[in-house]
Image 1 (cartoon, rainbow, N blue to C red):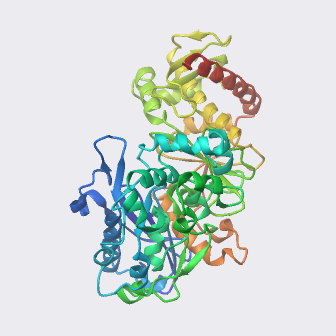
Image 2: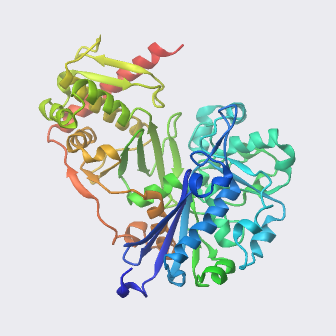
Image 3: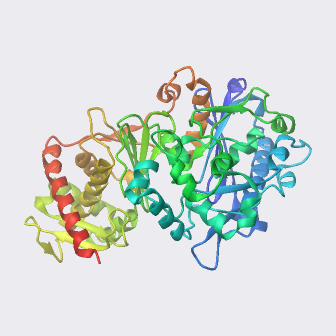
Length: 534
């Protein structure tokens, strides 16, 4: 750190992710001044995790030890201290946790949290604080029966999506809670509080049970996303007395209180340091990308993920709608598509001799709209829509077995982005003047792919370098939390952060071509769904 910055305030962002615990410190000008991490498998081998989790014999049950996360925090703070971070300069901290994980605090744990001894580490003192030692995490898919029960109780999958923003998913916390109550009744009975991974982590810093925030709370199948209170019908269908076990949810921008005196005495934090509500890793990433009203973010990775900022959501049987983490009156949506970069790489290998240069040339040398050829490329069963296989269509909507290599490349990329736009619009997204598309992930380095993205969405595309988006978003949210109540918007609070770079603008004829093509794509997708339904 530079000597000139020794007195500047610091803001910490933690990310309790699946495989590691990470932290980023930013200064008042939003420069990153410190980064650190703890890898669960290699640095905490006593917990015997693989990829940060325990995969059980049935292959469906996937858990992580709560004490591993506690011990990782001990280790991380010690590393930060050794690196010379001056904790007394930290004005506020926030964080994120892998979404959908749940932590079960044993009766009496709140007293332990309130009376932590600064001469001992957290791990020693919280040994007996969890009624269920291994927590279900987002990779768990063992609660199918509970999902069916919940949907039946509220009047069907679409009704549940209208209330909570998503149909029932096995990994969602409400269904995991219902399963715990049924399969581990004694341990469940001895819990006095249920946290998400995010609010559990905030509780450690607060020295008291932290509220679940609206945004991460929307990933539980329990929160009414319009009233931002727990849905009575969902709670009743899940477990008795859930109100008191969950506590009242709060806005994601809420300041929960001062940091626990434990951290003041053990690490030298200032007594005035504030803990801002922690949230899920996806909402924190939206903050890290600094998405604004009307923006859409497209992460082009192994799977492609689309983040949307929404004002008027239209919950559906596909995708997820959460309360917005930086403006509690707005919403965000999330869509995940399994067939992302691996499918692009397969077509590159088959049609461009394994060369991205030739792949890009194919996109440059073929016209917008591909002369009417259109394709669906689902190498593995897609989430949205639930279809598998490669389906190519000629300009007359007849299915064909093959296309020329150049046409195939464009059919793949146009098809992927038409799919992203179609399903985003079905959740309530609309392209308006000023809309920006923010591209991240591996394929965002390919200018020709981004040009197609810009054309299909008829909006400028910007790239943003985000290796630690959830961490960075948490640090930004810590800073914003201190001024949010006085009406400062998130975008104003973080205006000093690096700006995304403009890389592509739509072709003048793009809107005319793709508005028509989108209708045709939707019609063909529906045809495929009808043909593949049992």
